Image 1 (cartoon, rainbow, N blue to C red):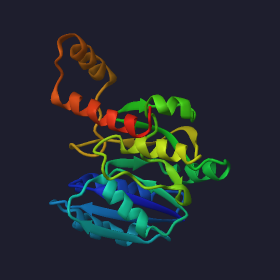
Image 2: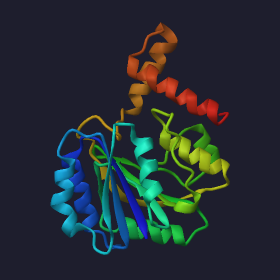
Image 3: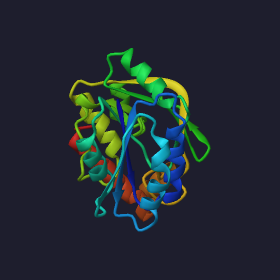
Image 4: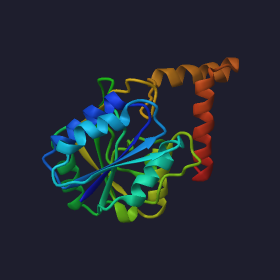
Length: 238
């Protein structure tokens, strides 16, 4: 069984679409664990309205906690998960109907610890390459929404404010675990409000890198990005 773990913070509207896309999955042997990370909107109402009809053979639960961030929420979901596999989704994720089945089939036909796919964000396609630890150490290219063998999952580092997914894959690589890629577009992310799936175009990072090097100036968000990246680089001796 797959345990689908969704941390949620004020994403009631997005969560409904995510759950509806789970309802449409061809692979129905899954459970859903929603962790309400201190939301102030109608998360509980959305869950109640849709949970009675959505899960097929799966079991759905909702856990509530004070706002502690996505890594803490994801780890809490993993602690109560019953499946042999875990899949972490952002609340704004919409899955293709065959996503669970496709990832599960690819993972079970490999020796890898996790399986990742192509996806879209704001309509832009992201097509990560085949797994390479060498390339992973240069920078992250694997989204959090990968299907992971639960026995190999080491947990997210709750001390990190950013790059939790990169840190996870680097930690798993250090433990001898690799990933396998499915070259198909299997899900999309919309990011309707600031949250877990925030993204800026590559040119923005290049622009502010040049500005910082030449003029010593860059916006606060870019400085925060660089500082967070350096934390992971030091942790993994990159």
